[in-house]
Image (cartoon, rainbow, N blue to C red; front, side):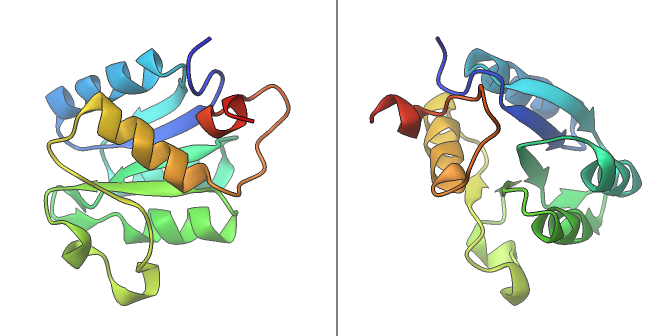
Length: 135
């Protein structure tokens, strides 16, 4: 069984090649990609309505920050990860402390950051995270 079997993930990334690479990494970890979108409006719509367990958000979406998507997810208590080349300095104060994955990143870094993002989060029945495997 893979580390995050059945974990439903929203990916918001505006660079097509990068999105494909992240999708492959997530699927290799056992995640199910609910949606992979490139624009703020699409991300907001899906974040507000879809059944998701985690989101991976590029901070810069064609010049628009993804922070409105993060706010929607936070209101829904859905954990998220920022994926960015800007580092933690690119995250506004109101979202400080959110997990940040610096680009470029390895599958191992992604796995570690997902584990951190899910720490203390109650997952849907049938979802197995790496942290549950250790118990």
